[in-house]
Image (cartoon, helix red, strand yellow):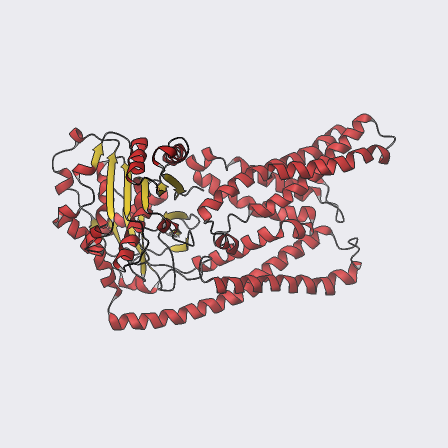
Amino acid sequence: MLLFAAWMLIIYLVKTFPSLAEQYPEASTAELWQKRVKKIGLRLGWIGEICLGLLFLPVSRGSILLRLIDIPFEHAAKYHVWLGHFTMTLFTLHGICFIGPWYFEGRLDKIFHWDPHRIAILPGVIALAGGLLMWSTSFQYTRTRAFELFYYTHHLYIVFVVGMVLHVGDFVVGVAFAGIFLFAFDRFLRFCQSRKEVGVLSATLLPCGTYEVVLPKTADLAYNELSFVFLNVPSINRLQWHPFSVSSSPEDSPHHMRLLIKPLGTWTRKLGEAVSKAAISRCPLKLNAGVEGPYGHESSYFLEYEALLLVAGGVGVSPFVAVIRDLLHRYKRNEPGLPHDVTLVWAVKTHKELRILDSLQPILTYPDYALHLKLNVKAYVTKESLEDLEIGEDEVTLTHLETMYDSTAEQRTISHLVGSGNILWISAAIAASIFGYILFTGLVGVFYLFPKDHNSHSVVPWWIRGLIVLAGMVVGVCVFGGSVICIWYLFGCTSKKKARRERDESGSSEALLNGSHEEFESCNNFRVQKLIQRSNTVYGVRPDLQDIFDSCAKRFSGSNIGVLVCGPEGMQSSVAEQCRAFNTVLHHRHQTGFSYHSVSFDL
């Protein structure tokens, strides 16, 4: 992108700079340079418009474009960050290249001009001010230490886009329209999905404070093993949405999904308090939630490898619980070509967090799994030593608490109106939205614009043309695309009622949750089935990644190992570094390749 911008700028300047002296023969050297700087600013703004269109593509969570190239939203968001910094740099330089010369010319008041038939400067200044405020709060430091500030100021993108449209008029159609249009469609679809209230079937409070939440879903809402959802609880905060990995396999049940949530911030702590209160009193968790998603990879790429190395930190083990569950179900169905060896390296701060894996009981899912799948688990408790633990504490006093099952929540399922849903319905809705936009702008052009100025662009103000573009986008997405989405919703409701009747005939869905409860109880009664034992737990140290990778390289010489990591940024960097090392210098020793995949999510 940087090379493209430099090439566009250089080509433009080479063509325009020599002609400026001929156009303004009486201009002084200083005046010529001021005009040259403005030309640079003009080109920077044009390149910035191109980047603006690309900027919105990665953050369209259910974008059909991202689905076609199989880049999940959590990975595409990184490109949005890079493009955001680059785009705002271009627009900032664009503003400086005009404001600077105006200052030296003594015409700084031009920033307040709003010419109806040329570039409107004031909306551009407002857009730039909103963009700078949004940019200043989007750096890593602010995102990690003041996420709410980052989250709320990022909604200034509305001011930025509207100001940009008023600034350049309908010029935005030919440059940035596609990205903004797809984002607007995705945002409207997310709005439709999140309006439906979702109940909570049950919740389990673990000794470490982490809690598992079970949400109802319809059988036609598909997701894969590394999916995640955005969760909102209006009783806590109506505006905040938080992403959580799905810890259940799609094969566990077609009618519910599970989330493992660790109380790290104010929002998750408040939700944890509600779970704790309901669990202690043995009452149902009467909460209504909003859910957007699930999102994630379109394919189960981890199945391509002979062996898997899963590296997790804390609650980052959640997606790997889903991966292991899915492998067990696939082996139970005798699917061929599956990974035959899985090594889970898990680092936690305290021994209480080890109970997160209590719900994973492979022998209950597939009793003969050990004949086909070798499951190696190595746990590291980094903040405690073995001597610090009271003998028998983790064997006796640490128990889980479970809320009562809420049968009324079965009706309040996650909506199937999701961008990662049925691609035919999504395609039809997008096509209808585009048709609606073309129809609206065409009718306005024929019956309003053309009779007034006959395409001379000298009667109807540019900013009104820009608003017509925005109005056409809103009408296309909300009216025409919304009509298709409404039909999709009605079809889904019909299939939901049919599935509900079949479930009523076969038995209550409460029985579907008994498997998890049995796994917890089995873990308490038959401790030999625990995946985490004293023998595979190391206290007081961090994982020695080089030793772990070397061991895997020796065991699977000549193979390609899939490495999945979910944890803090430092852990991801360390694992990626080991993959690079063993794929280069150390690769020739064992002829073993390591394919790195980050499962972590960072806005």
